[in-house]
Amino acid sequence: MKLPKLYAILDVACFAPPLRTIAAIADYARELAIGGVTWLQYRNKVGNTREMLNHARELRRVLGNGVTLIMNDRADICIAAGYEGVHVGQDDLSAEGARTVISPGRILGVSTHNLGQLQEANAGPADYIAYGPVFATLSKRRPDAIVGLEGIRAARAATRKPLVAIGGITRANARAVLDAGADSVAVISDLLSSPTKVAEEFLRLMV
Image 1 (cartoon, one colour):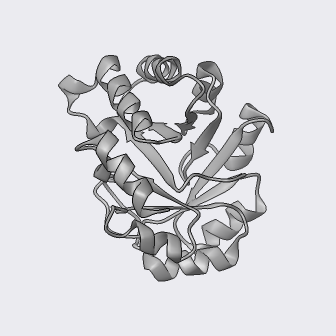
Image 2 (cartoon, rainbow, N blue to C red):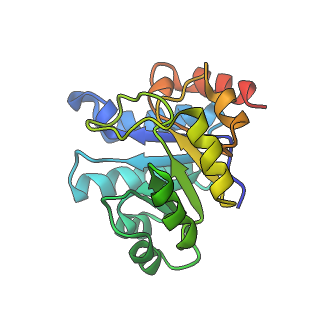
Image 3 (tube, one colour):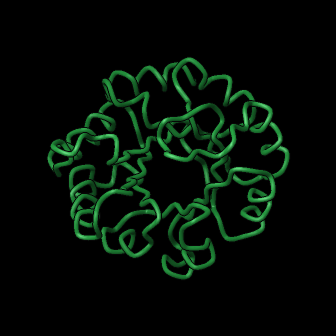
């Protein structure tokens, strides 16, 4: 499986509560796609199941089949919304459990934060492995220890599976992260201000 260099994450928690509407979230995703985003993860740690499913289905409708959609955590919603895959963390459904739900035909990603977790994910059913945080990040209330570029180099040496770097990645440091061995960079915050323009800039920088 070949990952795109830019892996956008749409985190609903980044939207102020009055702006957490289906229309606003769909518009944001559409702007990312216009900017060249071809993989998008939908993450919602603040909403209920009904909201997640409604959002997920609307993103599928708006983006059609031109964007690979990954559901964070909820393998059941991945199936219900017709997404291409699911991404699970260390505190979510296990990779083996997620694979059982989504079947071999869908993509499975796993978040890892140290080499022990990465080696476990490497031995399991994950199609790709996320590793980080590479740099300081504001997207998590209790972030794990920063791994830095050396951590990405060590992760690259420990797996042949596609490697997604995550955590504090911006236009200023994305190229260095790829040069350290990541196949793709996951970005949340740096895309928020102007999604189309910033996505285009990321893709130009990472050619």
